[in-house]
Length: 354
Image (cartoon, rainbow, N blue to C red; front, side, top):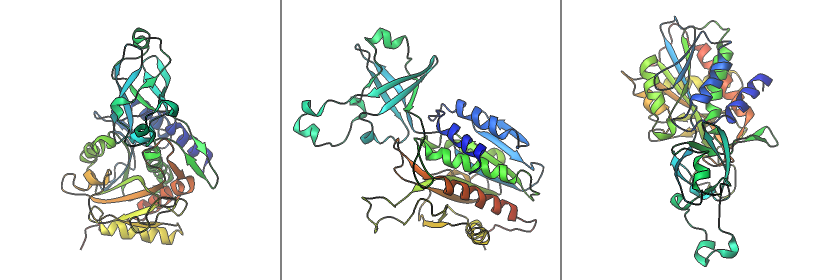
């Protein structure tokens, strides 16, 4: 992967962006794309929309959401311990003993999720079971409520501690690879297309509030009014222990981007993506989804009079935990595939299913 591109990805992964608190990461995106995008705008919802060849009548929209699951400070008790409210689909099972960062107006504040020592747990508690977030507390080292309140406000956002760990075989581990990996791919595709002669206007959107209802892509698609809209998001890898092969579609890290299939996907766009992967010798995987996807392709498809929608999935292990794992090669190949697709669109390309 290009050195500056990799640094951009790592900058995204180390910048907090819980749903509704995406301003910091949008500044990172803007700083990176302004050197090659013709237009960069942030709308009233908070979406960042970067465009090239914007005078073309036909429009293609790529969407990768910048928001991540997280928390908000709900209350502070007399002893100075913090209670959290979830933002998005938090897996409470991974919370005990986690490192937490509260993003205050005064700067980041470190804390840990406490857990009763095993020696003091009842037999029922030792058996595990569901973790109730209302019984989870964060210890910031405060002596009491007053000291905690001098540092924190009710409603401050929080995340798992951010950072990137590199493993073997081009794997990276980080909270919020869902979906900063997809955001990276959207902007990387824009960069790869920036100096090419295109027959379409290309808009790459860093969309907001996906984790709380696919909201940003809905308003961005309405504004852009694209003919084609492609969501780039993570998808479940199946190459680790504990999964039933009969219940999951095979999906491996390092085996290439996943091209989704099903009623949420325009069959012409899907076919063209497969053709471009084969033509450019890019490894790819297929995934059937017989319903409506739970990503930005969902609202994009039904915007205005309808959009030729598609979705690229980036294989991801351990989704919605603080150790999400992806392969850098899959990200790189996803961007190359999308760039090849955009460049392949000709004046007479017709994406109406018929």
